Image: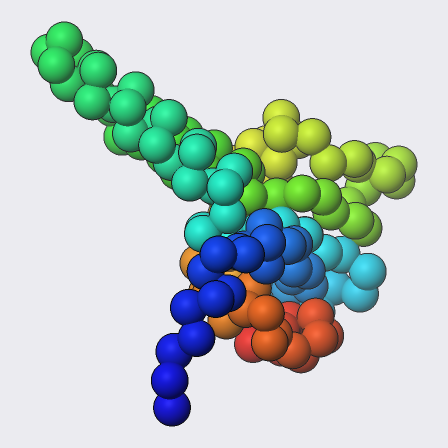
Length: 141
């Protein structure tokens, strides 16, 4: 079997969002609750990764110590950068829209959802051009 490199010239599939169905802490799918986003190979993820790495390199050359809390915030920012939208989240019975600030708040307050998203976004199979329908993907997450 040969590797056809023509798809590398047109890598639009790397920036095509996929949907992750959110699960509760028992592993059950939370009906209607999902996060959509792009993979670790997407332009936005890689640009954010480079920006954060450059920031830390500048800090280190200035002799500035970096705290664990700052590293955690960077990791969350990287995961948030990959999100393109979500649905099914509420705040006090009202729809809770996706914003970067809301996503950061969600990941700080709900580590199990952060972990699900991290695993999902880092699994390239979820974003391949031959990926399964999102319902099948959520069963694997």
